Image 1 (cartoon, each protein chain N blue to C red):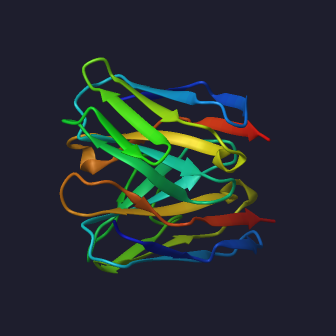
Image 2: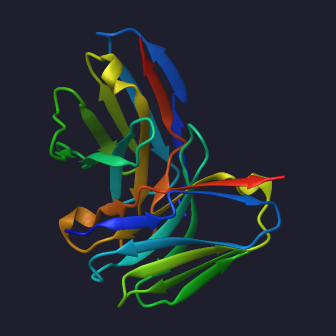
Length: 113
Length: 114
């Protein structure tokens, strides 16, 4: 059974810091991995999608890497801003099983001004 | 990627009543899903909404409590029936196109049952 773990559970940093969020999964048989952002009480916004054949994806100040063989992904946020404060979720899409997503519990990020 | 319109965005309901949540996708998608997110928790899949047939429910969720419709490829509804305070959660719909693309989520419905 696929399990997804995110570390740390919470993170508080001063504005301007570069930071790394970690995601690990137990079964390397995945179609892709997706990073989401969730603001309190809101839906999920997709940040980056990495297919299983890819190593990384970049969007603005965000960079996500994927090492499928070791079951790890990292989300790198450069020059953090207070507006980056949110919960960050990673999820893997697994073959079979109805094309479902398996989510991690999330990392709560607070960027202090 | 697809854009999903979900409504209502929030509601406060009396126990014993029902609420229907709607999701409209701006393009045809193969799969639609409904999730629940209880306070402080991650997302839990309720069911896969199948076009023109009964939804496929996850363990712990039943059709009588969470009836789902999907009359076409772009629209689905979730009803939370006979609500109790334990149903207070954020409910989210999600969709993905054919293939192994990414998932898009609606903006969520924040439900409070009093």
